[in-house]
Length: 293
Image 1 (cartoon, rainbow, N blue to C red):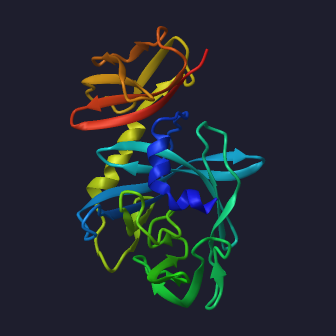
Image 2: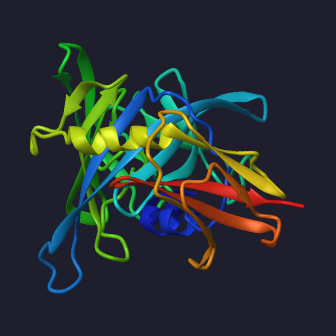
């Protein structure tokens, strides 16, 4: 299962083509991540931004979880990654599989009871070994456990966890020790709880407030009903000026385009999975839609 986490970028790109019903809820936790990408030569060629954000609480197989989505500003978002839960000092994750309410097997994402000399992902291709356990003081003066890892098969590669925050690579990027297919390497910049800064990576000492505030735009709009069959309505919660709305199929083709209309007739579209792209000023909000008859 952790192969999927290690191929996070590939999964995220795939999920943009599949649908889920959006649920609007105030975010509680937010992880802001900066990445470096390199193609050729191997030196970093640029950076990109992304984030993880909590959403609604859901019940899966009788167990309560919290939804988590990812954001890629200027590209797409939100992308529903899955659900997670905390039990004691362990955090468990179930990836979202193409359709809402369909999840993969639960995996152990974090174990904050680990001590020096312990192993994590022992059955993985690149198991992690705890090299040290220490304590840090977060931005609010709270002590948090810090666990530093090495990778047994990758000399020089490392990762650390901050208790209650997650991995130095980003919340769902546990074990992201090597670049992805496009050379991405992730670095957690900061962690927010209820929009208050809890942790800032001392190596970067920055937290992009403009990027974080962008994610709140998604909550300004709702698409309903969803799934739909004849008509969809766009609920504009903040009365933002909408210039146009596009409906895009899973092949990236614009199949409908309307100007500032809150009601859209989709009766002539075949059933399937779509994106609804809402342009409001300089902001673009993407929602997911399933047409089902």
